Amino acid sequence: MPDAPFALPRYLTSPAAGWTTQADVLVVGSGIAGLTCALRLREQVDRVLLVTKTELSAGSTTWAQGGIAAALAPEDSPEEHLDDTLVAGVGLCDESAVEVLVTEGPARVRELIGLGARFDTDAAGEITLTREGGHHRDRIAHAGGDATGAEISRALIAQLEAVRADPGIEVIEHALVVDLLTTADGAVGGATVHVIGEGEIDGIGAAHARAVVLATGGLGQIYSATTNPPVATGDGMAAALRAGAALADLEFVQFHPTVMHLGEGATGQQPLVSEAVRGEGAVLVDAEGEAFMTGLHPMADLAPRDVVARAILERMEATGTDHVYLDARHLGGEFLERRFPTIVARCRELGIDPATEPIPVAPAQHYASGGVRTDLRGRTNLEGLYACGEVSCTGVHGANRLASNSLLEGLVFAHRIAEDLTRRLAAGELPATPTTVVGGSALLDSRHRRELQRIMTKGVGPLRSAASTEEALEALAGLARLPGEEAEPGPLSWETTNLLHLGQSLATAAHLREETRGGHVRRDHPEHDDAQWSAHLVHVRDPHDGEPTVIRLDVDLAWPEGDEEDDEDPQEGTQ
Image: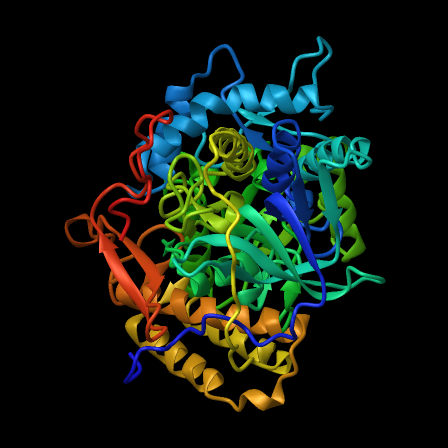
């Protein structure tokens, strides 16, 4: 570890606010979580402000191929869905959070259909359900074959467009949240927002609100190769961490087993080959054509993602190659084009025809199982701050997310947040109070982003060790020491600095966790260790010196739900 702990600033350097706006609730993000929450709140509170980083449809939801998991079939049950989720989470799921997910999930999916989402159906009009890794039942609802996220995003955005004229909701696109605004006692009362626009809403402004809901997605751009879109730079997680929110399970990064391998040096967002392709019968093979998953796990190619990713990495290492292959040729061109039109088209654009040749694949960053720690109502340890979707850590995923549970999590917990906020605001809770911004930190110039990504990929990727994580921490500390005057305040430097702050926290957690669990392998600790590591690592910034305190919790992640109608403080005992 570096000689001294790193320090996180409270605020990023930015110009003074040139405009202000006011709302009851500020929702940040326009994926399934943000849109669901904003639409639900619009029906129940006076004024909702939804801000999104680029355009409404640019987030990770649009890119979701596989589908949304829910126990919709008569032969399926929430209990079976719960069991599969707990197994995938490798002992670190919070069972109460998973129970919420699987029991409320089917109703939320049916509500989504009522809002206009069109899932694929059979000749009788029933939703066609398929299977993905880790599921013992067909419970994945999909749309457009492999365009589920795009269809869900379309349906929710259509609902939002239908109420654009409603004075109770305002939408600001091309709006990057820089920092959370807090009161003297640490409660969250809004955010500083940078808008690329014209007129009054342009540049830095202050969006004041009685509550803030973060639905900003993940941090995939912290690695050289990811399935995440370019907007996934961890802005919500980083802003929350600087404000004093607790972040948990950051070390549990999921690396999707089957991301199309584009050759050495390929960076940025990489094409995902959905797990649903294996669900329909595609097989992983090595360069010699050997199907290597057979015998490694009872579910073979449909084992949980961490198992498959690890098997691919081991086969790559044993054969001295940088990828394996996904063979779907036996499924036939007609079936592949009908079931996976988006994947087939993208593969052919890149010179590979899945109908006649195997697809080169390798693991790449896909999902952050950790994030801003919440209870079962989406509340964080900061009064007035909520989080849902990939930015959050509800305890649902544990050390490894079960396939297609992410869209469901965003849907279920966004609904819970809307209900909790409606109740609290009606009761006069979360009053508007003054917030202040004091000072700002040195920024990391965006020209160092590729280096940061290289450091994280090499040292804190799916294969780790004490030596690799320590080397990463030292290199990140070197970036943090660079002269701040070389970086001008602006979206690129703010994003890059967010990646640096989260990289330091993630690498710290990865260094501390001396075991193999979930999506990563610790070469120096090749087994998972329940005796020592049935625990969560929680990061909280010290308000006095800025150093993040790492707290080890050997208890369930989520706070007790309690009686939602009473005055119980959900923050009691969180730190």
